[in-house]
Every structure is written in structure tokens, then in C-alpha cells.
Image 1 (cartoon, rainbow, N blue to C red):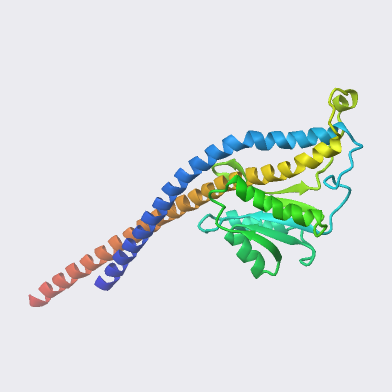
Image 2 (image 1 turned 90 degrees about the vertical axis):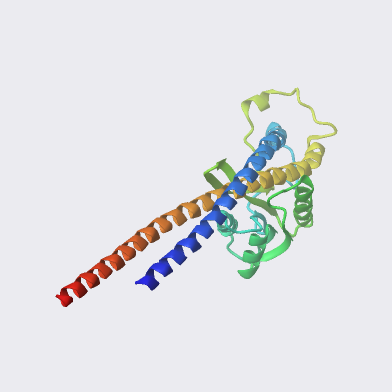
Length: 285
């Protein structure tokens, strides 16, 4: 019985040490989440504005012809998949990877650019064609990183190696909710021509709408990827904070159960000792 109580006490100390680590990770993730959300709030207006600008140009004139405008279904897609470089963040990584491959019917036709070590490792292990990877930028993405990713993707699109660019990242809904999202970057879906656009002729594009679109599309791709990287970094920290919080809660429950078992074992040992003393006393009578 003494050996049993020693084992339980050793388990309690081990779980308590683990809980201290998870609580420390939770505090670190909370601080990083605050910084990531601040960056997201700063970049989101530009991210939204440039998307609206592209939609306005396409929505104002149906005659625009460009390789960047959708003309039908794609057969050679490229997926830019954003995950983390480290684990301990719940289902954050696997949800993004599942989202990127859910519409892939033929591995030979699809290409992938992995942003984050987890996407790079898992996609390669499962036989997917990872043409480029960008590691150790997921927690602190910079605009130069987005430019490099966009340049690699645009190069494949312009040469015809791929005919569609999908950007798979995790969208920040709230601190307790994140959603894996597949955003079609190129070719851009042409919006419906609005009644206001049909009747308005005060917007002129010089030298032409096609040239303006040709200039703005690379900026659109870069800014969209950058905005997605910033948002994904906030989601990564939120997911890690939740995972560490759940781990700490589970550790507390395990400690409570072990403490109860320890008290029961100790009480049983005391009861047995009392019974032995009483039995010995009875035998001496």
C-alpha cells in the first residue's frame, strides 16, 4: 500500500509539472495573440480596399479581357497552404491541410506551395507535389514574405504550369473560433454587372481598364496573401492558447482524481494498520 501511495504522489508531481508548462505556453500565446490581432486590425483595411478595387474594375466593364479573369473551370490548380511551423495548436494545421486537398481529384495535376513546416512535411509525406516551401515565417510574417510567395505563384500562373491559384489559410472569426478558408486568388471571378455600373460612365481608366488591371493584379495577390498570413498568425496563437488552456484544465482534473485516489489509499492503509493493532491486542488477551 505504501508503494501505491508513492506511485500516486509521483504521478501528481509529474502532472503538476506538465500543467506548469502548459500554463506558461498559454500565457505566451495570449501575449502573441494580442500583438497579432493588432497587426491584423492595421492591415485589414488595405487588404479589403484592394479587393474592392479589383471587383469594381471588373464589375464596371464586362468587355475586359485578361488572363487573370476566370473563363471556366481549372484543371491544373496551385494551392498556397498556410500552416504553422510548430505543433501544440489543436486542429489548426490539419484543418488547413484537409481544406487544401478536399477538392483534389488527381495528385499529378495539383501543385502546392507550403507556408509552414507542418504543411511541407505532411503534404510531402502523402505524395503531393510541393513545388516550393516557405518555412519559419508563420508566426511573424512580413510583407517581403508575402511578395516572395506571390512571385513564386504568379510565375507558375504566367507560364501556364497552373491555371488557378488557391490561397488556403485560416480565417479569424473570434478568439475561440477559426475557420479554414479556400480563397480563389486567380483567375478572378467576374462579378455581376450592377445597375449602378451600367448607368455610370464617369469612371475612366487610362490607358485602359486592361492595363490598370494588369498593374493592380500583382498588388492584389501580394496584399491578399499578406493579409491572409497576418490573419493566420493570429489564428495560430488563438488555437495554441485554447489548446494549452484545455491541456491545463485536463491536468487539473487528473490531479484532482489522483489526489482522491491518494487519500483513499492512505485511508485504507490507516484502516488496515488500526485493524492489525486491534487484532494484535485481542490476541494478547
